[in-house]
Length: 317
Image (cartoon, rainbow, N blue to C red; front, side, top):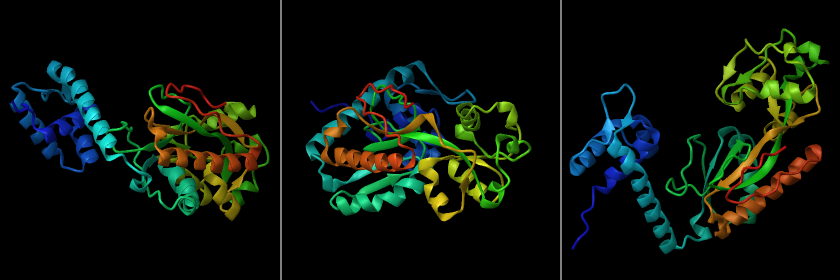
């Protein structure tokens, strides 16, 4: 007897919409239109004979049936992906797909990746700089590089480098900054995603927050934009050493009130449990740990944190 299967395309649309609770975000992830997502889910609902979403609310809400159905669909899709990968026996020649934070990708990885390609020409690397959460393995991403404290208990996580924070600004502005008191009345550039950076640096440097005006000043969507604004003389930004070395060497930025202070966050390499058994993944991990370790030692004498297993929750210190 043949399987009585629901429309498989609609299952993928439902899974993405249920995970995001948004037709729009599901459409962006799957490169279709929101109306296509809505229509596909309606086809699935008609096939099941029950609604999966409550569309009467201002926000998208799963019905009881949708809440029960979603994790089972996700498990089924994960099984399909895992079974297909096992049959394909993906080789190094198939390449690596790496999700990377935009600023780290642009300011560090893009500059160092040619070295990896020279050393390992048989491994083609594809970079994805979107900041969406990664669902291994269904998103087709092999590795992800994220900033954090190791709070990924269900993934295999490796601490690549501890972050070091230091204020940076244009050379002209740097000439006027000699002590923490010189920060009073200055424009401090802030980043929405890491809004605690200035306070964290002040605490590490033993400087009272009352010396900092954190209520005013422009805010930016990512670290790279804040660093570019600082280089243009707009104000001071908190620099992360791995991200500013090119600008420091070129003289676009100058660090002030040093030395750089080690923070509790770092850059982590994430993978699905057991994924590092693939030679291409373990080769990339070995390379990036060595590259970042050498750079960290040359900067401040500190080294990347230890590798951790699938239940990694350690914080870099």
